[in-house]
Amino acid sequence: MNIYNLLRVTCLSILTASACFAQDKTAPNAPVGNPFVRDIYTADPSAHVWKDGRLYVYPSHDVAPPRGCDLMDQYHVYSTDDMVHWKDEGEILRASQVEWGRPEGGFMWAPDCAYKNGTYYFYFPHPSGTAWNSTWKIGIATSKSPASGFKSQGYIKGLESLIDPCVFVDDDGQAYFYYGGGGTCKGGKLKDNMVEIDGEMKKMEGLEDFHEASWVHKRNGVYYLSYSDNHDVNGKHNQMRYATSSSPLGPWTYKGIYMDPTDSYTNHGSIVQYKGQWYAFYHNSSLSNQDWLRSICFDKLYYNADGSIQKVVPSGFIKTIN
Image (cartoon, rainbow, N blue to C red):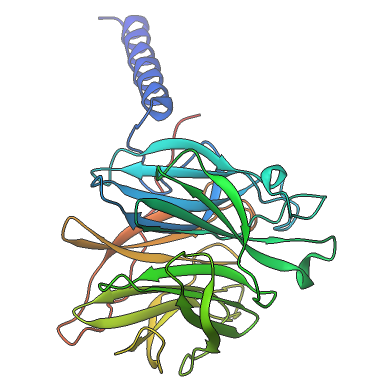
């Protein structure tokens, strides 16, 4: 084979490999590594395992081109049954469908979802007025399906103007609601209807350097409250911290940092067990290299014998061929 034919065969092989890679990248449910959503920008992943045996992730959506974090809108849901192949279940809610929301839209920030008595409850923070920072409410949309058919049902009455809802349903069926921001984290019980607070919300005591992004999970009878902090050193920002308690409403004992800063100005995560393995979900900016165009990721999470969490080491960014 002369040099011309050798070069021709080599080029054809490269082009064929590139075409196959591009086809795999855009194919439904194709495995892509971290970040695992690449067709839109996503952040603040809230992960849950539901009764159908699939793991579902409810993130927020950064809209391009970015304008800080105020253009966020149009929630999508993603699911998997093997942590490799991911399905975009489609859009479930946008600001224009929230009848009580601010007329300008946007500001659909970090959500969560819970299930009780045959209904899925989707909780999301959204301002009700133009003065967005003082008019936050925690909206609720419901569905009989985990990833479609959600309809706005108003908002939880009587709450402060705070963000980042988290709902934890304990083994006895009692649901607990958490939210916060700006250094304050509060928690309380939800009534059986899942849309009203039962009693008063109280400050979660014992947290060190709380910023936002509260998340509660339970392991071996111990409650874990994880959150992002106010770290801002040498261009590195949010660390992910956690505290533990024998009660879902504390008081909490601070335990440490379970994830160092990513390449993004923010981080926001969830912790969930699926098929015997624990996972930490989070976001970074590795697809865009811009703080407000983020992408959701996950990595395995491990516990020490004493119940403490080992530091999560984010897996490397897997580049694609465009």
